[in-house]
Image (cartoon, helix red, strand yellow):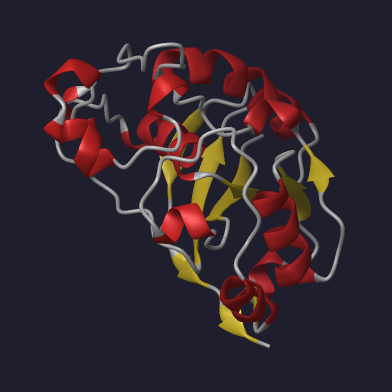
Length: 197
């Protein structure tokens, strides 16, 4: 039996605002982001779904603010490690030819920051987590990070990091993905907006 999961991105941190690659760096939400998240909630169709977050504070806190509940923590869904790129701005990395950084549509699955993790590496740890979630046979709302969402959506859309993304990850949205019995993303649905409380 297929299971639907909803992917939503954590709210903004100071590093997001500064356009810095956060990766595993555990930055808190800004005060503005906290207030905004507390004013929103998932639409009614997600009532009763399992609530899952990552070990990073920005994910867990967003989940609590949106729902008023403590999420389950799934360590395997932590953000990609950006290695030596972490904390730096993409624009600055692009300007530095020695950085190895490039636009995402040229990465392929194997692009890896020095000392970091490629989308392929990330999928190797994400896939077993999705299999466990699918095995529970219950819809799940997951508060994640952009890199992890990109990997899951890439599988659902059949995108190979080889052209412009066919989706656009925005905050305050839920991106439904259908998992098969093995936890493999096999379809995607239309995004839904978070709604006012």
